[in-house]
Length: 144
Image (cartoon, rainbow, N blue to C red; front, side):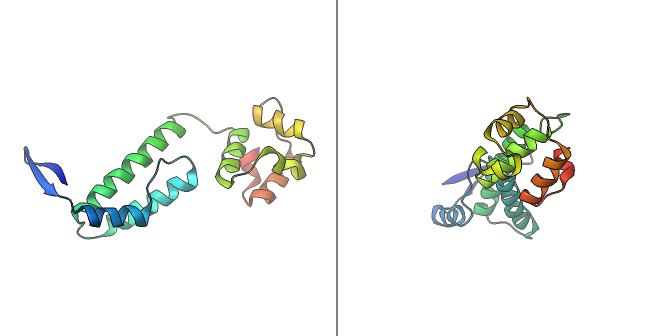
């Protein structure tokens, strides 16, 4: 497999070892980034690669792939100037942890309240913010 790079105005072909690249892919399992947790995992892998003094052609190609996946996620979910809403943060935490609305019944008390909060029809009270913070092990300020 050939990979091309541009140096000093010239395009240079770099050979990619399919087996070595396949092993790297199997170790890191890069995929479309859909949650903050996945994004942090991909960034950690990219950081380890960038810390290396000399990357192999296969590692360089993997780094480019990971950078593209993270960039797509960040452009989609961190729009410039956008601020996260408490219900948006709650929804993201639920997705990250694979939770359903029913999992929040101990915090909110009823399905309708959970639904109204997630849809933005009802705000999160201070009491609920504290309960959510304990439930998710995060700061209550995220929900206020």
